[in-house]
Length: 154
Image (cartoon, rainbow, N blue to C red; front, side):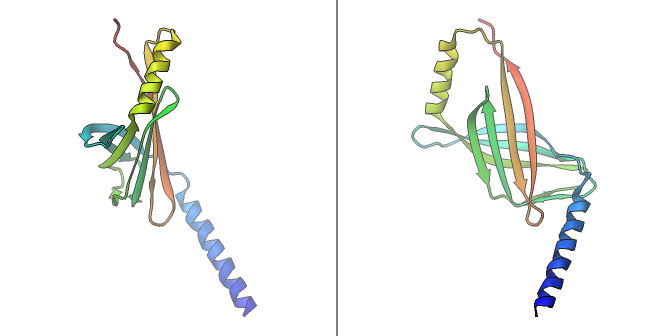
């Protein structure tokens, strides 16, 4: 009995190592914001539907059944969202994924107040969009997009 359990454990470990080795060498998915729509919010929150264009530069499709998005502005969390949407991004293809996100108006107001009270002139604002697509079998595919935008001059 013990020998059978040990043999099954070894086989499972070898299969898992083989599956992980097959995943190596894949390129990260590329994500860009394709659109943003307003959603009804409650109380002190802003809700938006963020449409993400996800491009898969790999030879195998990326399956997902949960997605998570986080938007940081000036190194502080601005908005987060989750979706239980399921789908697949085809090999060497792209898909648009919709994720509802929530931003706290209190957090926004405090950041804006700190921004103006800081007194330092700022010409550009840095942001980072990060997230993950959780797959049904082999974990998750993470993505990140950094950028900056110029503020209008007075």
